[in-house]
Image (cartoon, rainbow, N blue to C red; front, side, top):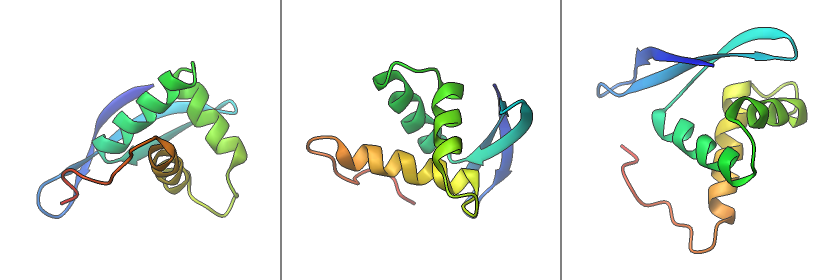
Length: 92
């Protein structure tokens, strides 16, 4: 998996684009760095590498939902499931 800046959001914030192989096909996903951090923590908590976690999320998602959206929702649901979870921080 490789990472590179994808493009800038309004306000100058950049999405981070990562390339990976899913089901034998190369693909890339652009997410906010905060979501990549959350997914990395989620993978570690489940004893998985990030590509394995993404593969599981990809396999379980509704095919009409884009992969980036499925990853964001998985990270959000995982964060909300943590005891004492809040949505504090820089959401700008």
